[in-house]
Image (tube, rainbow, N blue to C red; front, top):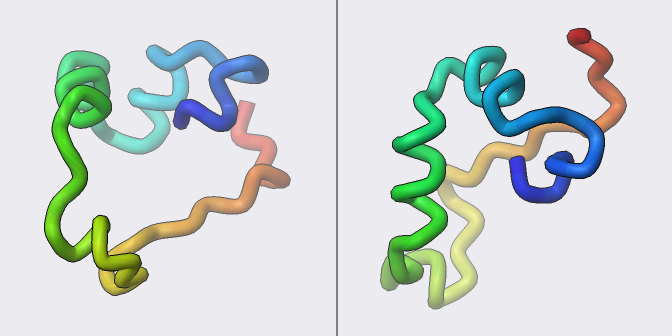
Length: 54
């Protein structure tokens, strides 16, 4: 979401992705998990920027 913040409001992206704004902002403030810090891509989602839902 942060990569697309210049193009779409956080509120709109949160609604489309089915997450709350508060949850997104809480997630951005958390430290990296051990798995993320190790560089594992397991469980990571990639959403193409080319999607035009709006």
